[in-house]
Image 1: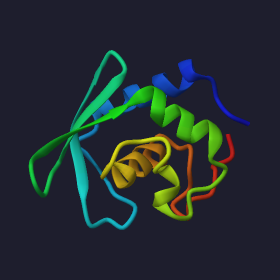
Image 2: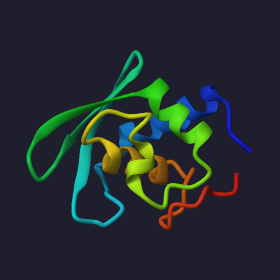
Image 3: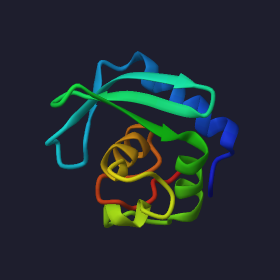
Image 4: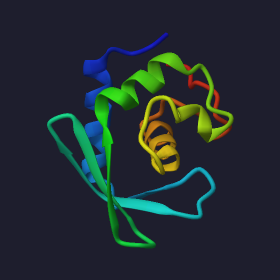
Length: 105
C-alpha cells in the first residue's frame, strides 16, 4: 500500500534532524538537508557538492516502483546523478528495504 503524499512529506521532514544518511553501498553520505517548497536540497559529504531532488518526482518514483533492485529504475522519475541519494532518502524514511524491496507499511 502506498502512503499519501502528505504522509510522504511528513516522513521527509525527518531528514531535517539527521546529521547524515548513508548511500545504499555506504560509499557516500548525504547531509545538510533542507526542504524548500517542492525541493529537497542536501550536500554530498565527500565532494561538498549541493544537490536537489524534486519532491513530486521522488513521490512518483515511490508510488510507481514496487522494487528498486537497480538504481537506474529511478531514471524516469528523478534527475541525472540523483539515483543514489534518491534511494538513500527513500530507504532512510522507511519506504524501501536495503535490498530494494518495498517496505511493509
